[in-house]
Length: 318
Image (cartoon, rainbow, N blue to C red; front, side, top):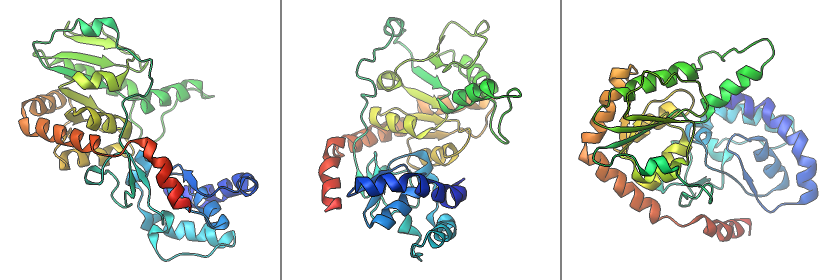
């Protein structure tokens, strides 16, 4: 995917966007980490560019894409580079402090605090306030990318068909439901994001809803069973929520390993319901994980707010 974006994708982006960029004459480009065409546009205009936070940026290996990006540069008449970090010569934007970065290969030049105000009007449903508080609260979610894939499959001509190697969202959600059903000693909130789930066999301590404002709920959760998407990871760092990460695809596997490396939770490697439930119990029982999550939250709170980015970008633009 990265090689394609550095090759054909970059040239398509350059051709489509450069006329507008030339007319607008920006002083800096703030770009999506996957938009390598914006690198070429910035190089042609002679201005700085910065990738913004994303799971894709976290797993990007600049050395791997350099030959493909150089081939694109050469084809459009730009100088080639020997340094793999020419893909981000001015650094990048991150939303976690440097000691908590999930990006292996790019420097976190500008770091800003993750906000919990995703939607200012968000509020938890009243039934959440009535949940028992004499036992641990576990939150389990399938994320947004896999349900979105289901929507695309349903809308596809010729019938639904998963991409090769992509997990079945319905089967994954069923496994998660079976796992949390084993946590009799906990109260569980499970969000489905619209993925079909038969709830008739679930015990009364498991409360199923299609969706709710995750960043708010995480402030009161003892363990978050998550697929490990970067948005969910960031929100958990901000709320000091211990993690049990059940990765499904893409950057989620690397995120799960990094969570365990940082001591913020556990990587679920036994993906049976029994194995998933066992990891949740391990995280609940590990005081070191709870302490490390609190340390991470303090580090997040000590990071400058996003409003300071304006001044930083102005300085970079000269």
